[in-house]
Image (tube, rainbow, N blue to C red; front, side, top):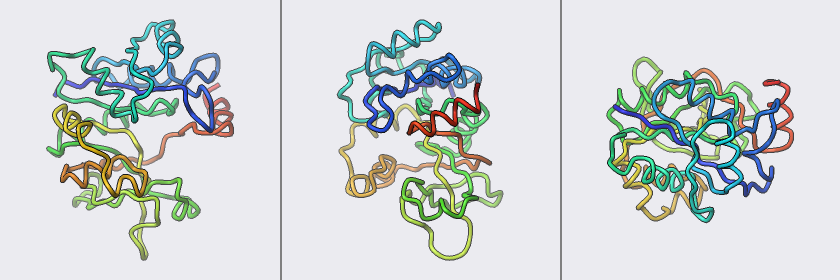
Amino acid sequence: MNPILLIPARLASTRLPSKPLADIGGVPMIVRVLRQAEAAKLGPVAVAAGEAEIVAAVEAAGGRAIPTDPALPSGSDRIHAALGVLDPGGRHDMVINLQGDLPALDPAQIRAVAAALEDSGADIATLAAEIRDPAERSNPSVVKAVVAWDGTGRLGRALYFTRATAPSGEGPLFHHVGIYAYRRAALERFVALPPSPLETREKLEQLRALEANMRIAVARVDSVPLSVDTPADLERARKILS
């Protein structure tokens, strides 16, 4: 397959205003994510930017950014809009959607989600890591992936995603890592679908795909990348990456 890597970014974060431009060791966070994506060496990388300030920061660092409508409702809609500008001829048949708040994302995890899509034949692929901290098992901020794993325990099929503690009973739970690889046709189908009932209830966009009978492959990874959502997360990222 022929991947393209897109990073949606916008400034309107309630918990951490102007989050993509947050300085981490002298580098805007969105540029750090861009560099990690480039290091995966899978294909061209671009930022799908909701505001001119993000475009300016990316271009100042030598990257490519595509302006998109700030009113677009989701990152998936944003990368779809940018894809139409970058590749109107459809040369890229795999679209990797990376969150713009993962400044320490391991390039190997980006390669893992691409391999999961290609190896599984699924419509979409994503990642999950086993929960090690007992407090995360009941934390609604930690999205759990309920997965039917294959015999190796490294690749599986998503059955559900939830903020609740699931499945119940003894055994491991898995923390969903929200990066995705889409087959291009699957992305186009996905963004054309209306929000689904379970998506609205759980506030988890990926449930729209499951409710539409789209298959989501899940690759197991060993750790959850640091996600910067709050000022405290930002300070932690600065300590780790400075």
